[in-house]
Image: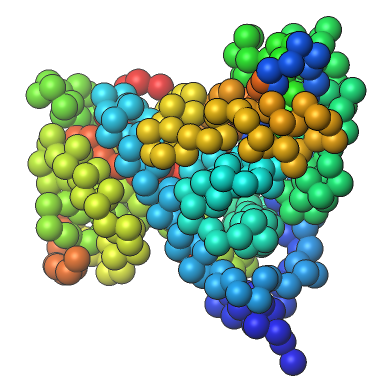
Length: 464
């Protein structure tokens, strides 16, 4: 007889065609720095175990094993938790893309940022914890930990051995050599996020610690992201570094023929146009026509993998319609689920090749969205370390970098998040053109759960 929590978990995995919750490999990279107001300083650092493995053509990744032996909290609805997490992702993406980077190519992983905030929440209490849980749309820290353990490990299980996409996720925590993690926080670090913790010397070797974190990020993203922490991110006030890296590389189910790739006009937001290489095919594609925009879904090779990963392209009808499309996405929490195309059609089909590298400091964006207390200090982060210094810890910054490349073979994407803690109705047609010759939005999504891995937009395909 299954408990209520176990039943919720069972139904979720049953939906994934997995009758028993399996063990999955995962890789993620995130970093958080914690600083205090005291002159005496300490830091925490945790690094996940490295497992190297070749991607389907050229990438190295790491794999950790998580099991699902524990049941979900009895009051937790895991599918609703995923829906809530997706809403957080859309809110964050809409704000970032429309307010901070509306004129530049952008890509980021909301899931990576979610993981880092989950770790911060695990070391928080009082009003700070309440605000974090509210922002992440989670009722309790137990629910948040269960979601992180079950969903992150499931979504980022490496699918390449079974013919699916190469995925990896790694977590790390770095701690000052004079400090120790509280047992309750260390248990979450070890068992929920499958991260390991290392003690380092932040007092006299801040530069070496920065380099170590950056090398870790590079390793866990297959060399795509070489620096997550800037040179001045770590100093004697830093107490902890929490790091998360995610990596994805998938081959299209139906690859494009490179010899068919030709230059065409791409219209920029300022009204000018440039010539860029476009991929094309005469095969039927999954395309949906909606009010003011179209959506195309390009599925990745699945093999025996039970998950289904797809890259969706959201193309406004108007050549300068991306800003209004972003507003529409922000105003509808279930926008993605309601605008997933289901029907294959044929017509003119052109999508540009592109490569994007994008980084930003996320704390200001989070503050603008109402998450303020973790960055203020006080006694909100007292559950991380065994020291009176815990009363003065605060998140000083959250660094995030992402990379994505789309070509005839498929997609390669990676993201790293580092946090520093211091003192409608579908209209169907038999023939639909999908010509992405002006700015558009893209999403990489796991369709059986609805979890969003990466979101971004292309303003100018020429710019990396």
